[in-house]
Amino acid sequence: MSKRNAILATATRLFSHNGFQGTAMAELSTLTGAATGTIFHHFKNKEDLFLQVLKDVRDGVLKAFNNAPNESSSDTGMEQVVDVATRYLHLTGEMEDQFLILHRHFPYQMAETSPVCRRHLESIYTCLLDIFESGIKQGIRDGSVTVDDPRKTAMILFAMVDGIARLNTYRVYDAGTLFDNLIASCRRLLGKG
Image (cartoon, rainbow, N blue to C red; front, side):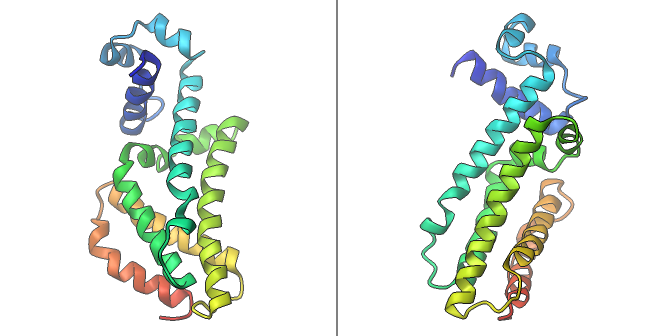
């Protein structure tokens, strides 16, 4: 692993657990063995480092989901949506540090003043909403889903699934114990419950 990649991996863990303000460049230097000057050789400042971490989070999430409709073996749009919800919950466990960053407040604060940060966040959520919406539209075509507005329904479904993921990320509640109820609620919302 290159020094730059080691810095990014460690920074991801620090930002996810300590937040932006709580992440010290000196600690990053100690953990990676990279002099502070080396870190600043690769990244202009802490904000630049965080934006690169967020870009990597974006790339990882998009890579995991871009093929979601193609990988689904589901026969109906309803089952595609259930697969996406399941995949999302599974991914939040696999990419725990990355999703913890997305579930923190500071990226959204930064997005208010940083167009780059805003674009990274928008691309993540647009991709996820598009995948949910695609399954819903397929379900409308094949008769497995009966809703009037696929985009708004996709937003509601995503908010519900992401809310469960956040409970799990912050160790408030085990998402696994809610899984069956979540899927049943998704089916009811889609009109076939």
